[in-house]
Image 1 (cartoon, rainbow, N blue to C red):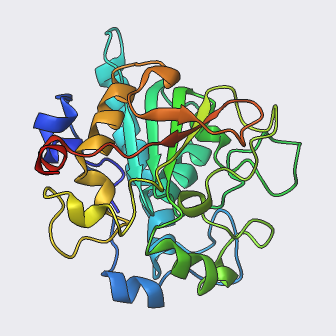
Image 2: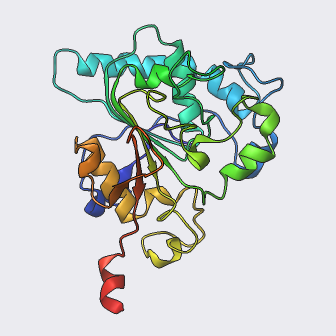
Image 3: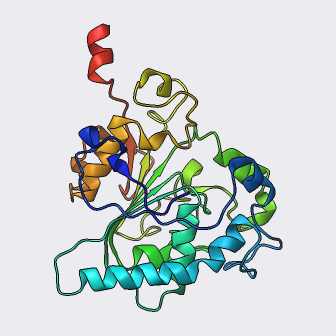
Length: 272
């Protein structure tokens, strides 16, 4: 649930050596999180400051503001680029916190993986009701890339079992379904979707020796070399259509969506 996640777990594959800062908050284990997920009725932002996972996130917005202040000082008068990688509930942390900041810093690359937020969050404000909660992330960013998989094994429970805690109009999870619509003009011009279903799947994960035994597909993003190389290429400014093993999603009318094609690891290719 870290806001910053270390792709340097496998730096030999990612080839990204930027300073990694992890931001976390008071939370629960996986089982307790399903019990103390959020408070009802749904509200954005939450009304409570502690108690459930999302209440605790709301109570940590001030700490996030302190982190942003520190990053501003580092960035001020320098060429330092600030990148964010968010995973799962970390996407909610960033969405909530950025909405609270009056003047956030300019962000370079923002990677949203397996996001447990509503799938209408990045729809342009005014086009559809009850959308756009993620625009405070995309507005000050150079680029936002959304990584999702229909094979996620955690987000379906969030989507269906915890539906009463979510945006009632868009309860579907961004990390499971991707952006709600790819119609022209629906997404900010700097926001892209990458469907990782061909790679983040139960049929592929066991073939990747770098993935620890028992790792959920929800968390496997951090261990699969192909995903890490995509992230590293994105963080270092590679054009959207220049990242290896991506093809345009034919369902995307505005061409802001890609499909990540599975590329067999070298060792597996040689063994066949």
